Amino acid sequence: MAGLYGTYEPPVPSKVIFGQGRAEDLPSELDRLGSQRVMVLSGRSIAERTDTVKRVESLLGDRCLAVYSNLPQRAPLATAVEATQIALDNGVDTLVGVGGSTISDAARMIGVMMAEGLTTEDALRERGHQGGGNFQSTADRARLPRQVSIPTTLSAGEFNTGGGNVLDDQAGHKIRVRHPGLYAHLIVLDPDMTEGTPDWLWLSSGVKALDHCIERLYCRGSQPATDATTQKAAELLFRHLPQSREDMGNSEARLGCLMGAWMSMMGAPSVGSGLSHAIGHVIGVKYSVGHGYTSCVTQPYVMEFNRPASADKQAMLAEAAGLDTRGMSDEVASEAVAQVVDQFILELGMPHRLRELEIPQEDLPEIARMTLEDGPSRNNPVQVTSPEELLPLLEKAW
Image 1 (tube, rainbow, N blue to C red):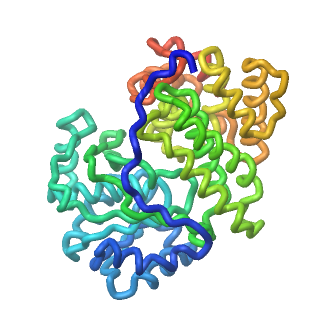
Image 2 (tube, rainbow, N blue to C red; image 1 turned 180 degrees about the vertical axis):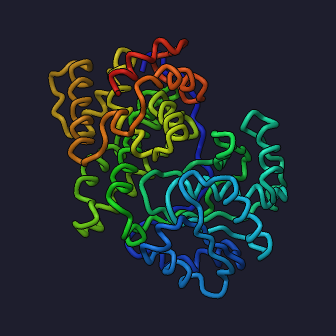
């Protein structure tokens, strides 16, 4: 405990209900929130290929005034504008997001757009450009709609707080907003709601949740209060993700994964993410790659890069993975768990190299430069000050 020093920020007051069948409690929970005029947000695939959105719509009954299912990956600006206008036209007081991080991120931005009356692409683009792609909203908190999240993936974006984002596809970057009132008032973790989520998305977002765990363990701000939940989250994901494939019909395993994804985010207000997320943000937007896949092709190599400054924390991950670390030094344990993570990703059938995502090798210097401009790179345990320092890592990942 020598030298222990830090800050812990408690999470926002999101209510989380979990367990099989908990979506059935949605009407009573909305009564508690005082929600009377609801709009459902989702992507097209989940609305057309599963019955999840229809089930939610049925549970909402007469209070469901609109369903908008046209939010594709990263929610391009035009779709957010369209959803905002529908919500305003219907006097919506609550947004119920059904899906992954795209939906929860977009729902928070749509909430701000509703509160500020941003109903055109130009208005939102101008607002975003005032802060270089990021803007601070001063909207009256009372004007923000309530937020409910029903996740169908393990990306855990529903647990992000204080901000939202959509994609300015014209400019090729995200527009982000910050406001202290942006968080999910209710989160429903129900494995039944994840039925129909394709394995590629479910499993890759599970690796994304494991990426959260790894970076929460060793990034700046980590501490015993966050290490405990993060280590347990990793244990749940290592144990349950391989048994949670859609064709296995194992709802208990899927619930275990949902719990792991939740716990991977418990330290988020106090511990930021690091280099794996920073690289993922760049290649995700630049090449339209899902964030689950980005974690699959970055984290094993980032772990190796960060080992000199984080072997003790990576040794904690080894215990979560079920390795017998008795008699091992932290260095040996960290090397062993890196191999476990590597094999774990391969056995899930996930991509393992940047080239598998059709990312050109000649783009690596530009990716390195853009990564240093992404906020999470500054939380990394090994500090990076020039793009040249990142190139060996990216070459290994390629």
